[in-house]
Length: 150
Image (tube, rainbow, N blue to C red; front, side, top):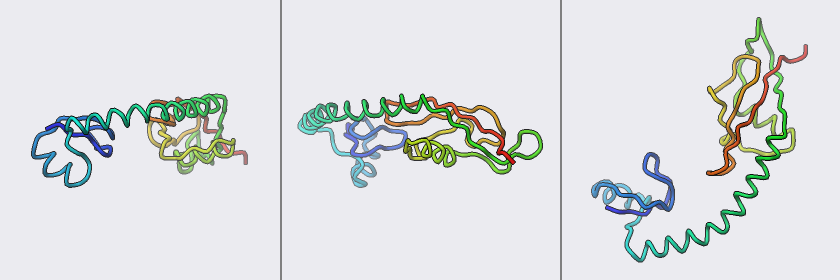
């Protein structure tokens, strides 16, 4: 059964994708839940026209995300944290702390779009995070966790 997704469906596809699924999954779950519609020839034509119009608008959004990415690459973030013996932190540094540090430097980024490699940081030193500004624009963002001045 060929369907057009109306919303993102985990492990299946993104909004406006045309997917092939088993008949029961489409008829009993996707269509009644409002997650998909049948991919009839007329629905495919409407989808193609909508995607063409959206691509024009999407280009502006991607260009804006590229500008933000360039300004993020110029930033150098150092996050101060309380340190115990050695280089272990009291607590941890997470994407919430990184989002707050970036906010102080002038850029506003939602913490949901920040992914610190390895989850949370529990030691001082340099780390990397991936910041997703758009589906197609993902920035590698280096930052450093330093000991707080006593």
